[in-house]
Image (cartoon, rainbow, N blue to C red):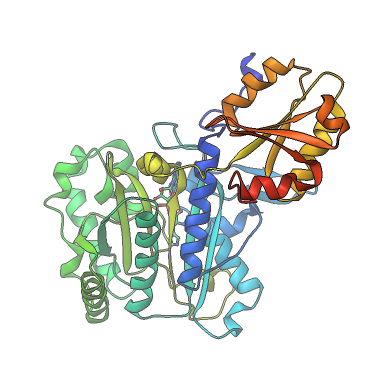
Length: 418
Ligand code: HAM
């Protein structure tokens, strides 16, 4: 196939059986969210570009990973690189701040980032996320983290280790920022190129540089700069998570790549890739909705979870739901009746298919053996008598039954649930 017809770099076709596992993962996530009271919200996969600029001008997803375009009407649009800004826009635009708070929302869908493709880093990935609006309390942070852990655990990854930090608030972070800039300025000549450019625009990001790891060891720790409220918030949150039986570890280098966070940030790593590839990440972002013309004070906290990454970690634990399939085989000339009988069975709730390839009866049976457990034969002498022959491919049991009693026989003798 010519290169121009192939899928774009960094994207994937998700085929069965992976597509079925993915669907199962979606159900686990949304069901789990519902037990916590988080109801699904769907926003467009593109927004007006200024919505995503609010994520932060100095973040990678805004600076150079955006899929932005101008439509025929001259409107600047961007494929969503993440869900939080879109949900914040929806919260404000739909006046959800007038509802009783907190408002608990979740979402599931594709995100687009023009990243350098590598293992578990795609240009289109699927995120399940949850956002809680309206509460300033550490109990809210705890609840969203507990939800994220519950989803991961329900998917088959027991005991996730939560890495947690607080990046302070507008009162204490500027003092820390200054101290950090001072420290890194002294090390300027030893920094990688990215860090040298980030030094003034976004110095906290220097802490999560994968190259300059030795330098950060001596960097000032934000814990020493937390104001009283930030310290209390962090302390209560870790106590709550520990008391709920979750494993928590403070990571002083965890700062996250998005600019909107205030106080709490958290992540859990992929079991085989550590912090290089987070399974989920999130935090508190009390100021974002206000920058999108929301009310002055709009506290919020949430997380996003990479479904492809979760699947790569737990794929072997996710079974594909087994369905007993019925194959309606036919003698030559009975293609139509065979299709109609399969349709009748499907209307009664069974999983049924018929041959569409003009196969001989022998070839149909070979085909049936690949994915069906029961064969119903259409044609011949029985058909004239309004009967069909039914055979179990598992134990060879065979029976003849009146057509109008086929459904009862499948239920009672062959124990198939429709
Ligand atoms: P994020 O850390 O950029 O946060 O992404 C969330 C998760 O999406 C990551 O932990 C990872 O599992 C997955 N992910 C991100 N980029 C890729 C990629 N290129 N390929 C595969 N998986 C990826 C956010 O997006 C925030 N909106 C999370 C949040 C919600 N914060 C507060 N509320």
